[in-house]
Image (cartoon, rainbow, N blue to C red; front, top):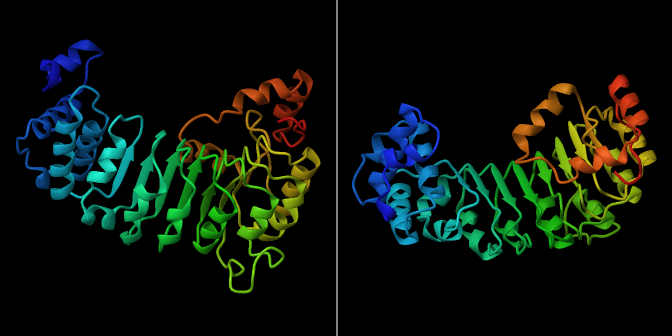
Length: 322
């Protein structure tokens, strides 16, 4: 391997690693060295860890990593992929064999500045895809969504150029969870399109949705109180509605909470409404990191209002700036 690195050398550089981690790394090094570790016989969890280690390994050349990646994915198509903070991530997508795209259930990519919609067109052949997450991919416009046949959860976080055309594609997919946080061009009109408003659509466009959205995140978008009529009427099955860092007023948040039976129980999450404390605690497993506005909440709340929110268990009275 590059730099004469070995699993033991890697372990010596940092804290001790477990036997399982050592075995995982050894198998990954065998793949990167062009040897055969018998990938077909590996347990599912071990195969997943080996592939993720190859994807995140920083020292080997991209050519060596690509060879190991291609060998592994051809012989052991993974049900989920996490390509995050990896210099070769886009190359990994290009190198994926067609059978892998067809069996993928989850794809998590980003941050990746160079990722574009064309890179994701092979998803059109996917029959199993349930979860797609793109984080901080500024060139993504969402046009690739037109080719998707099925999807359960769509997380587009920090993709600033998503717009109304993106929403038309989203509306055609019967999604349970939609996160479009940081899409700066998403406005009240886009929300109307999402819910099939005939005010903005032609008769042949999106039909009124028949699905039940459980989670909608429009944080850091351009929505205002004007979208609340749609949200109040169409989100009665929602467990999470997030509108942080938007122009929706505190009064509008109170109206939405009352209409949907939701509460704001997290003082560090302004304008985030949830069904219960259990739903709130589960948000960490959905979101990849602390939201950028978490520190804004502390500044926006006065000490007195913060204490009142905590004492009442309902932080519904957020300042307009939150």
